[in-house]
Image (cartoon, rainbow, N blue to C red; front, side, top):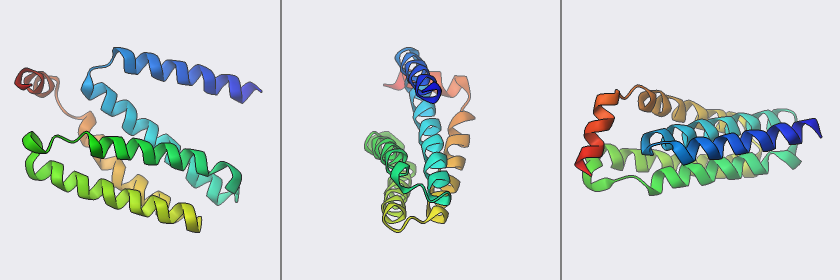
Length: 135
């Protein structure tokens, strides 16, 4: 009961953050949420809690799909194509991990997504403002 209340409060907080965030901030929130869900799924698999691993894998999969689908290939060039391929690979690995209950595969996706999130977090404000001007 207590955990359910915390989760509901957290969801409202995330929705508020997204409502007020710029596109860069939304992407940061999505990546962080995907990483959190992947960590939960990995923990469920490691504890043999198969009843609860599906929902966080599905959430992470949905977020990664959204990240892939919103790439701007016109302006992103080779980087966006490489990211699309990497996101596709992550989705394939997560699909396999879900079927085989392999925590190492979930960890692999975490290790692939972390540097992308880290790089995204390090984009300077001036670069973000310049990108917004180009739209």
